[in-house]
Length: 417
Image (cartoon, rainbow, N blue to C red):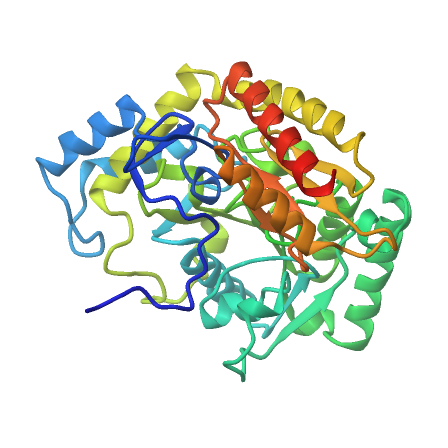
């Protein structure tokens, strides 16, 4: 009998029968409060009626219309609508299916546009699991180990993570920018560097936000040397951080923006956006894909945009994020093992460390599992799995936040006393 690969690791043992808003229900009818949102994907909640209706209507018209063969209206309308939310100047869009595909499309574009071979990424970043995307990923060895050689031309520079270094944000930022200059001087000449690639908030790397001075420093060096700045907004985009894009917190100005996850409320869709001038430098035939810009996914994305706008979900993410941060900080104040509550909007992480100050993945995992037993679904992240992350759908309400905080407090009490 065929079975799933035994290497797949399940965060919970829940077998879902249906979902509604921020809740999942298993086959026995038990309700779970889902603060994973499919790893930040179900931005409008599970089975939002507007998204369901849009997908059902489109399924009855055409499911697959391969977009380098024929066009379809959901694709054309979505492309037009994205001008309402994309950063100024990024007016050309290429669609694909997953974050990894979009990252590789951005990589290909920057190398072709500049004629340069190298990419500088930042320690702790996660950009995907395919060979090129994994080569750019440094959030954990599990994403890149065991199938070397990886893609060449990748160099790694520090991300300004105050908690990891034990410094202030200013000290961590000074160090990161100084080391970037050192990297450009000793490892990847500016004349060989096509792009800087960075997440506005580290995702798998532990939910560590960047800051305005760091991203401004990247922009300054990019402009000085003709390097392109690529922002990976796969997890931070579409309202997740309490602003539409994570870059909006930092006044950052990318040359290429990468988006996926929350774009279509659970349907596979991703994209890169760049200026007309930059996108024109991609080589003919370098962009394409069988399932990219699937008609049903594009219809779902249009409905997602409507729901985010009409239900004011970006502001809701900011407001509920403030409530959630306050509640999580109250739990952390009772337990020395939780040393940091950080993030932006509805992208918050709780870091666990042991009595010696070392990352404590075992306790984080135990707390995550205990929360699941009590009906609260969470995930871990961080290099040692030491961060428990809260990423509910943007439709989350104050009552849901209060319930989650109560269950989390009980779970932590049960694990650490």
